[in-house]
Structures are given as structure tokens and as C-alpha cells.
Amino acid sequence: MSLANALRSGSKDVVGKVADHLSPAVAKFAVCLQPVIADRAEGSYVWTTDGQKHLDMSGGIGVTSTGHCHPRVVKAIQEQAAKFIHAQQNVFTASVPQVALLDKLRDICPEQLTRFFFCNSGSEAVENAIKIARGHTKKQNIIAFENGFHGRTMGAMALTTSKTYYRANFGPLMPGVFIAPYPYCLHCKARQASPSGNDWYTVEPCMPGFRMNYNDRQCCNGPLEAVKWMLTQQSAPSETAAMIIEPILGEGGFLTPPPSYLRGLRELCTQHNILLIIDEVQSGVGRTGKWWGHEHMDGVDADIMTFAKGIGSGFPMAGVATREDTFDGIAAGQLGGTYGGSVLGAAAACATLDVIREEGLLENANERGAQLVKGLMQLQQQFPIIDVRGRGLMVAIEFGGTDGSLSAKYGTAAAITKAAVKRNMLLLSAGARETIRFLPALNVKAEEIDQALNILADCLEEVFGSEAQPATAVA
Ligand SMILES: Cc1ncc(COP(=O)(O)O)c(C=O)c1O
Image (cartoon, rainbow, N blue to C red; front, side):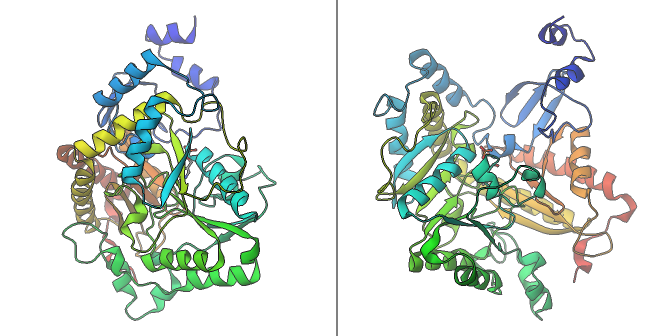
């Protein structure tokens, strides 16, 4: 019997057989208990073929910005599919949906970014951003940052240091890459040694109603000093094409650097004629309550910005936005791609941006984010959560040890995500430390956030049990 027929007939072991034909190298985060097959989805919920309904706090890894299958996005894709499925970008100047998308992007992108190149995924956007930077500056080196995640293709992988297994045994990696520190204030030794150190770490995330925001965070300036020395000792400005950085780390653990760090990088780039590439693949398109994550920080202007994930509500769509002159020095034909700038993707993106704007999803991201953070901070009183951080609906918690230390037992985050799956909630971990991230739809409802917090409380109870204690003992 075919796999599809076996699935239809309700055969119990078919899911295992399906898994036998798929690459085992793709990790299956949410289904670590038993394999399941996705069937349908709506808003913040997903149904699997075993009839189970799951609350989705992963948002398809930050993709389903308007929720699963928003009717306006579905309609836009359906109508476009009936008109034109593949208007190849090398053949036409543009397609009708692309023209509309250009208008919408020019409305929401930082004003200096006026040129767009479209592609299909975040990794592809990063690859092209690097090509543009090298092609324009005629320089080779790229400075990337610790804990960063920029994708899985050969170039993007070389810029990725959030975990070793993304690169292990796949080398040699793209040469000309230098990795600089990304501030991790919670674990910063200078902060820990400072008499006022705890003030840095106890400042609340940037949410309405909280005492202090990230903009008030001070930095020890160690990481910025290290970048300056890197330009003196390892990668001369005359050889450095670009720095590429996530304004808020995604896969690396949802860290927000003190704004002075990004401003300092901007100044260094301007001083040395180096391009600043801001990777907004995870933090962009309203995820943080503003259109772009770096807009939370004054004085941080991108020369090149990458976007993907949330722009298409799940339809593959991505792009690179640049300054007017950044393509100078790159000849026609040097960039491209068969499917880049897909009409269906552009239609999905237009509908997505309309929904975000017209249904007030930036406001909702801020309000629901504040609700989520507040609930997580209450759980912090009971469980060893050493940090609640994030902006908008890009929110994470990091666990400490049950002995009050700053390092949780290996596997704590995985145990929580497993406990969540048992209770029908899809949740992701992040980074090399024990961190859980929340990436719900930007139109998530208040009752869905409450539901997520209740389920999480049960998961924490299950995992920490009698060892549960707040993180107040942390030095
Ligand atoms: C910041 C960032 N850049 C790039 C990528 C790669 O995107 P994709 O998986 O679409 O290739 C990701 C994916 O998680 C990301 O978070």
C-alpha cells in the first residue's frame, strides 16, 4: 500500500514508515515524543492527522506572522495562482504583485534602503547580501558575531556560530570570515564583577509598563573594543567588506545587545567604509512590535538589510534591501535565481503587510508581548528562570541552575519543550544555553497567551518538581 493510502486508512505505523524515507538530518523539534503528520492549521492552532489540536507558540519558527492560513493571505495566493504562477525575474522587469510589494516595502523600510533584490529564503538573502557587499566594495572579509545564526547554505553557515553542529564536518568553510563578540550581558564577567552588576541584569525587557528598557542598559564596552582590535589585528578595514549582525539574536537565544554596541558598530563601519548588514530574517516584519528589530535603537542605519520568514506568512519569500548605490560595481547577471521574486510570494507578502497594518498587529505584538512577559515574570518567582527577555512577540526565558548558578543543567530546555508537546503546545528552544523562545502569530489572542502560560506552568512543575525555586539567589 502506498504511504498516502496507509495514512488515509488510519494505519498506526505509517508515520514511522514515512520518517524512514525522510532525511534523518532534519531535527524534529516539536515531535520528540512520537512522530506526527501535519494536517491543517488555522490562526494559532495546528491539527495533526492523529486528530490532536496543538497550540502553536513556535509560529513555524517565526514565520506565520498573520497566523496560519489567514483568509486574506489564502485569498491572495489563490487568486494569484489562477492568474500567473511563475513570472521569471530574468524575463520581465517585474510582476504586478512585485510592483505592489515595492510600494509597500518602501513605506515600511528605513528610508535609505531603496533597492530590493528578491529571493526565496533567509539563507539565500544572506548569501546575496554577502555577494553584494563583496561585489560593491571589492573587499573580501566579513565580520559576523558570536551566537549568530544566518542560515545553512555554505556561505551563511560560515557566518553561523550559535551551535557547532550547524557546521561540524561540513568544512572547509567559506574563508574571509571573522567572528566578533556579541554582548551577552547576563553572562558578562564585567557585569558580574561590577558592584552595580545586578542592576544590568534585573532590568526588565522593553515592554510597556515596565520600569526600564533596553535603551537604558549600559555596556561594559568590552565587545566593541574587541571589534576595534579585530580591525587592527585580524581583518584590516581595507580588506573588510561588511559586518553582518542580527539586531536581536534569533536562534542564538533572543539576546538584545545594548544599543550603544550597535551604534558603535555603525560608527566603525562608517569610519572605515565597511557595509553594515542587518539580518532581520527573524526579527523583522513586525515581530518585535516595530517593523524592523533595529528600529528600537536610534542611530543604527543599515546599508543592507535582509528579510524573509514573516514577510510571506509561510509562503517562501525573502529579500535584500540596500542603499541606492550599493549595486554599483555588480554587473547585470551576477545575481538572480530561477524562482526569486516569485509572484505567489509577492502576492502573499502584499497581503501579509496589509493584514499587519490594517489589523493593528504591531500594536497587538506589543500588547500580547507585554502580557506574555508579565506572566513569565510571575513564573520567575517560582522557578529557576534567570532572564525574561525580548521585544514584542520575540520573547525568551533562560534557565539557571536549581542551585542558584547561572548555568542550567544541560537538556533543561529540551525537557520543557517535550513536556509542552505532551500538553499539545508547540514550543522551541534557542541557543547553546538553556533557553525557550516564544514566536506566536502576531495576531495571537489574549486567551491564547493565557493558555500558553498555563501550559508552561504545568511543564515547569513537571520538570523542576520539588527542585523548583526562583532565581533570586543568582549572584
Ligand atoms: C536571523 C536569520 N538569518 C537567516 C536565517 C536563515 O533563513 P532560512 O532558514 O529561511 O534559510 C534564519 C533562520 O532561522 C535566521 O533566523
